[in-house]
Length: 225
Image (cartoon, rainbow, N blue to C red; front, side, top):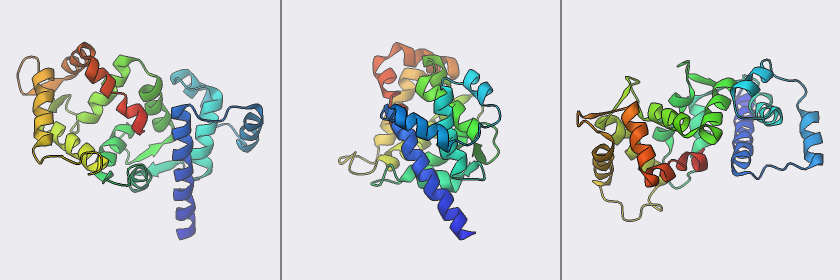
């Protein structure tokens, strides 16, 4: 049992690295590699055509992602502990556990406590290749921790602290203890249009679309995931 768990985790790490290559455009696409991939994907997951229609991934990309997700981890699902272990490897100088928790919940659209392949590729499709509005809606849902349709200052403070912890001291050598609060105050000054103490989805989208710096900062998700 321990050996199976170890193999599953090792496989998911390899999957995460393959995903990083796919995101950055460094996935090898020569003919020899195509032939190898098609040989190793011994069967097509049920609903592949439907996923291709529902996402912005090609059939080949879905096959590569599915092979890494399912063949290396036969259970076909990723729980939160495994997700945190994978994610932490990309941020060795910080503590990514809290941010990974929030990110896991955003991927777990059905609130089942695990991420299925369909959950994963649907979210990735939005983050990597979705429209600006789709990306902003997904980001809003990530920040809306209690899922009540609003972002309050407590939620935003939790998210900002988690990001700072994840990036670590090497990224922010002169980080002051009140930096998260300053970041949150600036966020609400810009986003909370009617000054009612919460940010709605409409306010969030409008504010982001009006600000070039905010729009550029959203690219963080493409680089991190």
